[in-house]
Image 1: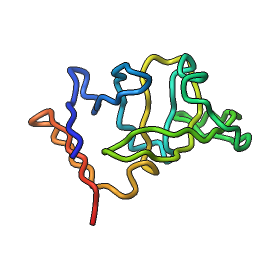
Image 2: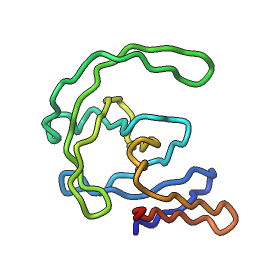
Image 3: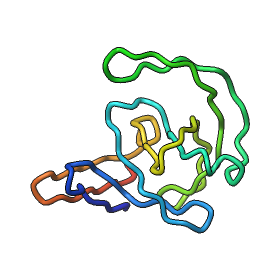
Length: 118
């Protein structure tokens, strides 16, 4: 099980360890991909280019960006995930990465629980 918190701004977050460092990862239920990762992790993750994709953002904005495959540790397993890179300092976890998990968010208790299904 992965545990996290709802921060003071109401954002559901967990911590992920990548390259020996703890990174805040936002659970973004409006993002149907796997990951958006800080650009500074590009070389550390040794990404493999997959394709150029078009992403639809909030407010009707559309961008084209490079999509990569990366290996990450998540819920005790090494997973091949698809990732885009951005200058942000936190990761965003999308619903596709959670497709084999149950996500529970309590905004009242400010807790997150992610359990692997079956």
